[in-house]
Structure formats: structure tokens, C-alpha cells
Image (cartoon, rainbow, N blue to C red; front, side, top):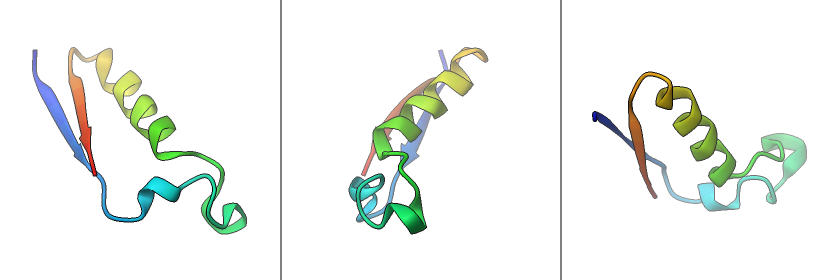
Length: 50
């Protein structure tokens, strides 16, 4: 099964809590879950790292 490596930059661990009026309320974990769900239907898995 093919895999996708999702590499996130520094300070993204505060997404969803830091200045939500600017950056929104979606957390980094939620983004990773969304990406995993999107590619799962195509037979891919996702490995995330920061």
C-alpha cells in the first residue's frame, strides 16, 4: 500500500488554540485526520511528523 509522508512545520502544534480568529479552530490532529480520510479512499496511508 502506498504511503504519504505529511511533514508539518514548527509551531503548527498550536493550531486551533493560538489566535483562532486568525488561524481558525482546526487543530493539527484534525488536519492529519482529514488528509488520511481523503487519501484512504485511493488506497494510501499517511504518516505525519512535525
